Image 1 (cartoon, rainbow, N blue to C red):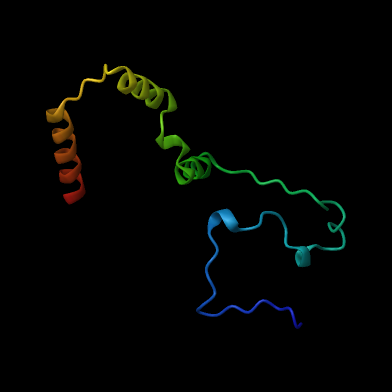
Image 2 (cartoon, rainbow, N blue to C red):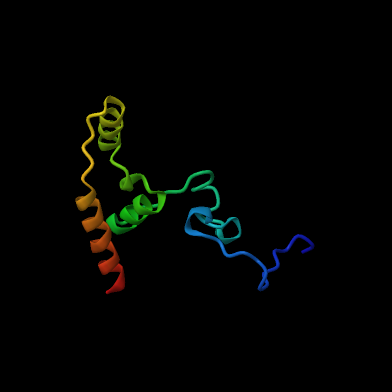
Length: 98
């Protein structure tokens, strides 16, 4: 038992992404010990899949829109509307203050 994991108040907590999936090695019963060796299957709900998408930020960026804006800036065709930007900032600030 020299290598036992000790948990105390200074031990960092694990995040969802760092948790191992599958059965714990010490929880296998003699009947299932060889049946699932080396494989694990996890089924996520639609909500869990959506939360994972939000966590990694890939759903936040519209790559096609970014490319179109980059091209418009490079060609000098991007029309900037300061009033629209100001209105958006004010609306965001109001939403945060609710």
